Length: 181
View (tube, rainbow, N blue to C red):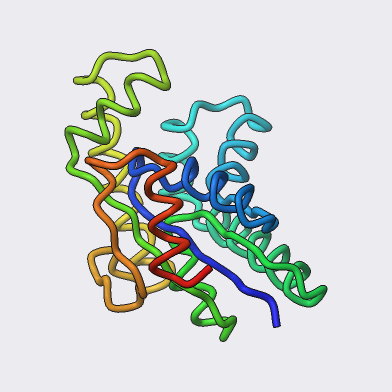
């Protein structure tokens, strides 16, 4: 039976970096909802913020993204491949698909996350802070409308970690230990 680890968290929490590192260290495949969303934005010639606003009005974007992720996860699992799935909603959605998953939520204070985003996207912390607040508000409303999911409900998660004082490497090690990977 394949091991499936779903890693979620808000923007700037480290979920993509930790998911990539965990997959590499354990030899797991990786499916990234975040990468797929960014790819969809690029294909339309839109920034992440612009695409997020479009998705707020066009729920078919999220539905399509989540279908793509579920299809990829099922394909990997059917071949017995161990897998890390990165994405804010994946723990909830895979649970609904009855796919046995170790569910992980990574988080950090808003200012810490804005600082990380400003560094990787070469923008001021204030701009990053404003954008992440807007993005989180839009996504929270959108996910509630589309799926009835409250992102503040942590009851679905097996492991919840604060990433503010740990390196991605330390977090991957901690996950390997905490989740028995």
